[in-house]
Length: 179
Image (cartoon, rainbow, N blue to C red; front, side, top):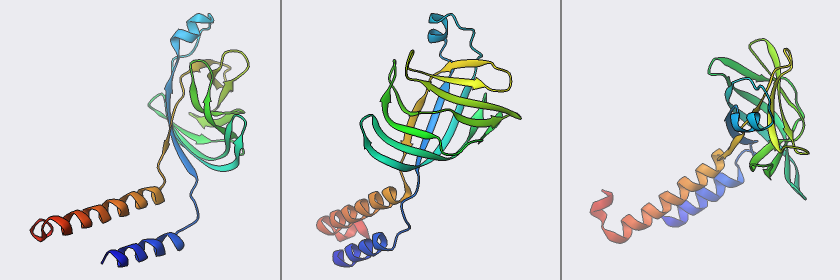
């Protein structure tokens, strides 16, 4: 039984689809403390986005580099966000003060409410993320909370491992538990 499960698991991985893009969930809002520190009049904003990106370079001195393939989300709890530019790099690593992870290296343009916006990372002076309304010129220094979401093959591998453990546990203890 266990050998059949292992062989079928191996077959799944041999015939599985190619690797999917890495997916990230990013949330943030106006960083009022940093805005005040620099004396900026930042707009009040919040966002939640999903970014899919493909690996371009691995092992660069500052981390891996991915290319953004898609972006979707919501700005200020009401405006849909869609990607307006492709080829933007997303750096995998921790940068800035305070440390922020998986930063856009060059401006990440998107549209929301019929206007063009961009995320940018100021790695030279403040180490902060900027959200700018390119249409009106208004901007905010924002927090950037980025979490990588697991890929479906990773979840499949986890599920197979748990199933094998459950099978071993049930067959070793009592057949009544698994009936």
